[in-house]
Figure 1 (tube, rainbow, N blue to C red):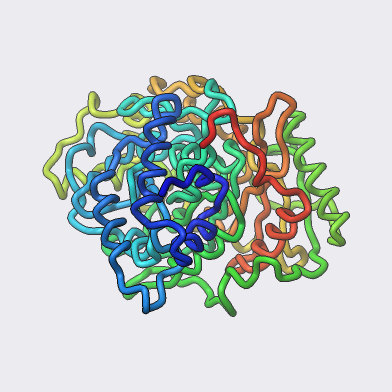
Figure 2 (cartoon, rainbow, N blue to C red):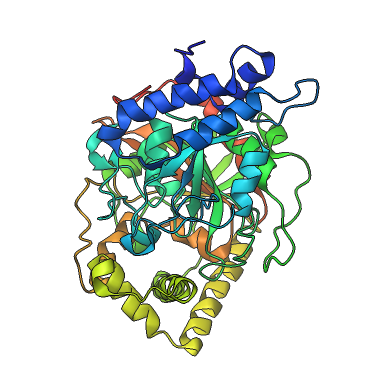
Length: 482
C-alpha cells in the first residue's frame, strides 16, 4: 500500500495509522526512502543511508504480535544525527574525515530508547565538522541546503536533521544542542525545536558529560506533540550519570493542550549588548510578544543582569577544551594521530587553542557559567518565561562562514552576533525552545526563542501548544517538500 499523503502526518499520526493496521512499518519505510532519494541531491541532508538496516527492522516490526500493546512510535521512519547518534555497526563521523570509517560498537542510550519507542532508523544526517558551527557545511560531506531556499543554510549543527524534517522526508529526527544546535536549525527550517533541561536525556552508555554539561539531546519536529511524546519515550537518568534533572510530574504529552495559565513573560528584543537585530527578527519577537499578550499573558521588557563578554569568553574556553577532548579521546581509543590535513582549518585552530587551556582556566570558565546560572535562577523567580530572538538574522546563505579561517577567535566573531541568545540556556541548563511563528518577506522561516525555568519543560510545552493553536504553522510548506 502506498501512502501518498505520508508527509501530511506527524510522527504520532503515522504511528496511529500503523496501530490501526492501515499501513505497515515496511510501507512507511519505503515512503521515507523514496523521499530521501527524491530530495537528497538538492538538500544533502542524509549523508549515510541505512536503508537495509531500516528495512530489516521495519519487516521485523510488521511481524510482531499485535495482541500486545505497540510502542508509541511503532514503525515511524526516523533519522539519527551524525553526532552522538551512535548505531551499532554504523560510523559516527561528526562531519569529519578524521573520524570516518569506524563503525560504532554499540548503540548510544538515546538510540536504544528511540528504537524501544518503535522508530525505524533509515540514515544519518549531515552536521558541521564536530558540530562547532551554526551552519552545516562540512568539507567531508558538503553543504546541507535549506528546503525553503536552497541558497541558504539549514542551520547547525543539526542542519541535516532539520532539512529532512522540513522537507517532509521524516516527521521528526534526532538532534542535539551544545550552543543552539537544536534551536538554530529549527528556526532556519520552520520547525519546533526544544532543548530539554540539562540531563533530561542521558548521554550514555559510556559518556557521562560532554563540554561541561552544555550538551542536551532531543529532536526537531514539525509538531509540538511529537516533541513532547518523544521526550516521554527517552527521558530519565541511567546509572552513573553525573547530572540529574528534576523529576516530571506527569507525561509531557499531557502538557500539550493543558492551560499554561497567565504567564509572566519577559521579552528582550535586541542582540548582544543591546545591538540592533535584523528588522525581520525584531518583527518576529514583537509579533510573538503581542500574540502572548493577546492570549492573556503578562508581557514586559526585562532581561537578566548577565555579563555577555564573560559568558562568551567562558563558553569559548569550554568549547575549545571540549573539542580538544573529543579529538584526543578518539586518538587514544583508535590510535589515530591527528594531523592538520585531517581537519578544516577553523576546526584545527580551535583544537590547537583547546589544547592550551589549563585546568585552572577550564575550572574558572565553568565557575563563570555557574554564576550565570545563579543569575538566571534569580531572574526566573520573577518571570516564568524569557522571550528573545532565536537568531540575530534570517538564515544565512551557505558559504558566509569561512571554515578556512586559521584564527579561531576571528572565525567565530561574526557567529556571536548571529546567535546572541541560544548558548545561554546551555550554560544554565534551562529548557529552551524555538517556535516557528514568523516568516520573512522573502519566505524564510524565523523562529522565536522561549526559555523556561530549570526543569520546567512542562510550562514550555503548554505555551508552545497554545501558540501552535493560535498561529498554526503545520500547513506552511517549503518549495522542497514531500
